[in-house]
Image (cartoon, rainbow, N blue to C red):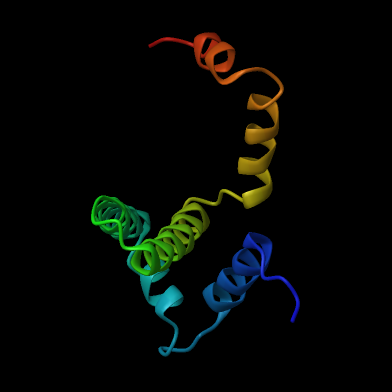
Length: 107
């Protein structure tokens, strides 16, 4: 079995976003707008935290998958690609985390 990647998930989200069917959960999320997608992502993030605190490995894995899915849906809702996020991560990993954090512009 081929390894499933975040790029595969992003491609699935793209395909479902372009579908016209009412049977796609992804399409329904996107049709409700970025704000709704952000709220759903936040709910999933909280569930991931709870699973972590409860030290439930199988639930942690399932919630992590939910977070990744909803994060990619949220990015899609705002027109941001995984390639763009990966490019930023690549830039950040060129230096230590402490150096990178110190280099960020302050508001």
